Amino acid sequence: MQLAVFVVEDNADIHENLVGALEELTCVKVVGGSVSEDGAMAWVAQNPTGWDMLIVDLFLKGGSGIRLVQRVQRARAEQKVIVFSNYVNAGVRKRCAQLGVDAVFDKSTEIDALVDYCAHQCTLLGPRAALTPERTTGDSP
Image (tube, rainbow, N blue to C red; front, side, top):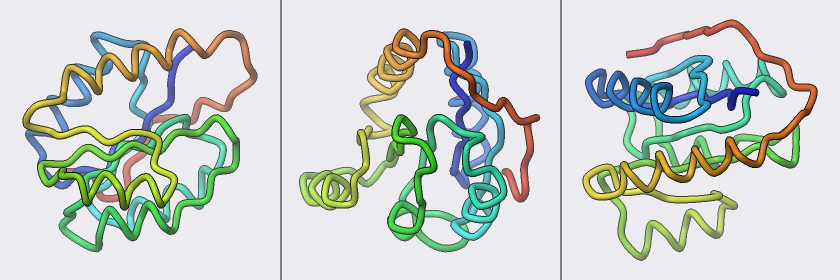
């Protein structure tokens, strides 16, 4: 079973490196990506059950990762929303927790922790009937 992940990241190099690491080291299959809040929301609206995890940067080319997190509706209880940003501090962690974010990782110091988190989620999957949409991008980097 693969973990269907949608990545919201506006830096092309970070996006590429993150996708490569997650797909190589875990059961993650990146099913799409976006550089903007609206692009990500459009994809999520069209694929409400087609993702297991959203990985969201806070600062995007268009819109805000925090607003995206506020707007996303989970269609399945096991769907995870993860924040992955260079701008992580105690206040950001607290705000993300208030918004129901499942985990927060600092890009500069916690990439290994994000990979470990995803690998752990893979071990929790077990057999389940999940849609695995084709890789799609609306406005990926």
